Image (cartoon, rainbow, N blue to C red):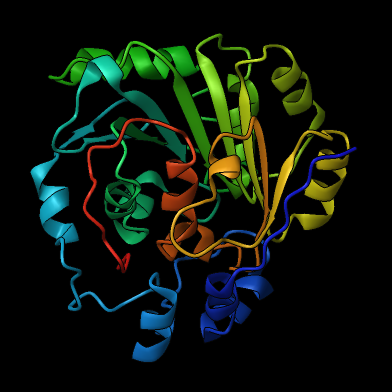
Length: 297
């Protein structure tokens, strides 16, 4: 029998009500970052995870946690690469997380406009986070077709020891074109698709079945029709109906194949500070941040 775990999420329902989600859905494919309307104070307290204004800092100051880490911006002929590590980073137990943006943005705009380091802070994990250039539109070529070449470039330009072990690739929307080319890299052991189920999905199935240690975390929103088809072919998928309150349940964090049906919206998946930190915490990586941070932004 197909193991399936379905949970309703108050957090996802609340986020759906914000006005910007409607405009994000109308765009269908990547739009520029949107400003989300804020839930009421009562809703934030009830949900314990929500979006707040920049001047409403949580008990642990996210800007300070970002500053306490280390950031490099590496200039290359293929565009800049951003690298960030948290305070307390330890290469011996760390994971390499490579983030690839979608269309209608570039790596600098995504890094600052989507507040990627703040979201990496919220994951609390011991990782070296790398954000690389990717096509801003479907007519542009893939900037980094080789994951190995990208990581080698980081290695020679960052004054910090890189993780020796696993590599995780996280891609949003149009990032699927880059991630498809990275599946052949033997160090890649986890792929996270954030509403990126475009193109040919069967290479991901073949890649996943090629080694028992590999994991697939897939979030469907605008791509729900395609993600449903993919996961019908992966009967071992653990399925969540929306994003839960707080952390992901234990069975989801350890699932080899995790499928989340999202109602947050295509762009808020990477701008709202809820989905991206949650899926990063599903990587089962050692954490460097243990104190609670109740409100992402």
